Amino acid sequence: MITVTGANKRYGSFAALDDVSLDIPDGSLTALLGPSGSGKSTLLRSIAGLETLDSGVVRIGDREVTDVPPQKRDIGFVFQHYAAFKHMTVRDNVAFGLKIRKRPKREIAARVDELLGIVGLDGFQHRYPAQLSGGQRQRMALARALAVDPQVLLLDEPFGALDAKVRADLRTWLRRLHEEVHVTTVLVTHDQEEALDVADRIAVLNKGRIEQVGAPAELYDRPANEFVMSFLGSVARLNGHLVRPHDIRIGRDPSMTRARDEGTAESAGITRATVERVVPLGFEVRLELRNAATGEPFTAQVTRGDAEALQLADGETVYARATRIPELPVRVESVAASAVPVTRGD
Ligand SMILES: Nc1ncnc2c1ncn2[C@@H]1O[C@H](COP(=O)(O)OP(=O)(O)OP(=O)(O)O)[C@@H](O)[C@H]1O
Image (cartoon, rainbow, N blue to C red; front, top):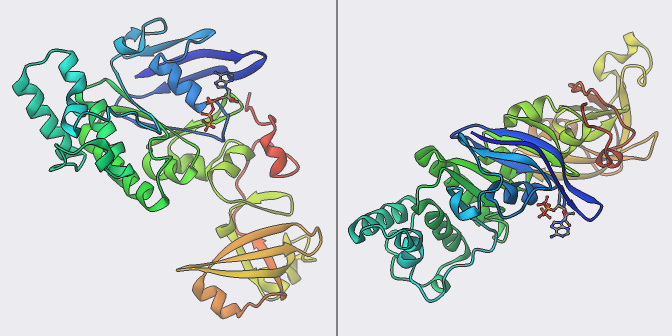
């Protein structure tokens, strides 16, 4: 277990970490997710010992490490831009930590071969870093971080500099690696899809504070507040409620929800909207709509079958109704406003 308790870090008057407490269970893959500047890297670097907290305590396992230097914390660390030793082969880069620990040569050779197999770099032993692709270089970085059998693996946007396809491949690969190696892993990312895809726990950060911690599905389905809900996926605002685009039903006329029996379209929670764009996304279709009453744009996601049945075209009028409205403890006026600190949950 990694435990951070009451962590504070200021740069001048700016609070990068504002009384952060977080438990990271053994063997988990926890993502620190938040917008740029929310304090994710500062928190990770504090766990690594690369940053000194103004106050607060960091524990790794049963050891308090708050004042322990990074090299004595039993951690592996991978940055976005991994600084490999350019003049060393892949094999020597991965072996580096073991060599300085003066492990027997045979043990080092066996461990390096094993790791290169795990990260899918068999046969690349004798290449130099410049002869690897970006994705291969990051996998070498992971092998190097894992070589010394750290108690904890800390990853700061490790795939951040790679293109979308390579990122997606490496995500799948990291998840499999974690299933195999099971080292407690903390991953910093600003990409909600990456966090939902890879992590078994997510801590959402905003302005130096933790908004919510939980399993991905828990955060997605039961967000603690509008910030978490907006950050974990697309949202639309219908009749003052934040809803997911796939929780919106679209019809050609207001009676689609038995509104006639219940009163006017507005009282039944139906929104009149204009179709601005119909965007096919494979199985689903994204509808870009504009609220006829407020002029606000929003999107709805429907199946291709539903879209075809509706025969939608740009400029047409449709009616939208939320089929599911998550209960949020705090309501604010707009999605944009949810980025200001209103949602502390305390
Ligand atoms: N050495 C420093 N001096 C001054 N301010 C700093 C320093 N390091 C970080 N900050 C500020 O602290 C805040 C948090 O930074 P941090 O790097 O933890 O954010 P982040 O969530 O990781 O963002 P990003 O995804 O952009 O890296 C930012 O506003 C940043 O400008």
